[in-house]
Length: 298
Image (cartoon, rainbow, N blue to C red; front, side):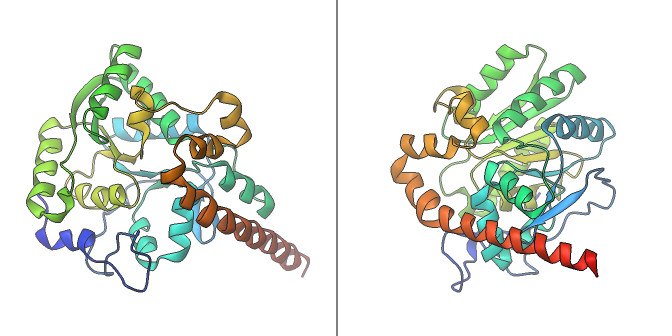
């Protein structure tokens, strides 16, 4: 199911870049042909990354419509950490070049777009997108597959969503063993499991960039499926982790709630890496707005 040479996408680490990145040489990862996909949304660029100007409801409607037409693709939900990785890692940019739809999962991206003068309409949270897409899939008779998460978290999320939407067709759940990416046989097995289940949508909860690399390989064999990287969403939906209160999500302080909840895991990402990067991103966005104004006056 999967070309063994593609496993180098997981194995290669560019010493010039941070070891947190899963990297690959330019020719190691084949590109999926997305020429059949027409994305009817405008695009802005933040730190070079294309972000589609779209609402959550527009995203759901577009995915359902495409799926019913037997057209698949790959949805990325960039937050500030993904944007930071995109800005600093050439290999990660190469990987993201084959995505179909990039929706802003993070208020910092929305704020930066406003400073740039090209405001995104809203934050499209990955967990909320997953829930709403499952609701729409239940109504349209399409099936979903849950891949990744902690052991048992995919099943818990599927059970909660099935209870909320009784007509939802759950094609299957699978949690790969830790370190699965080191053996091409494991990746081939995952591909076989999903191909046999034949879902319309696959939610991949492995965290970025691991989920992105895996999606890039698997979708080559199943181009009519929609793939969505959803990070830790299975744990949120299944109740394994508590989500931030509504006020925190609306005000853009969900990151602070999560930092307090998981300080050891998130302190470096949010405070050491995220805050300085966000400050620079706002400055860059402001200068780009001034440059565009100057160009328009000439």
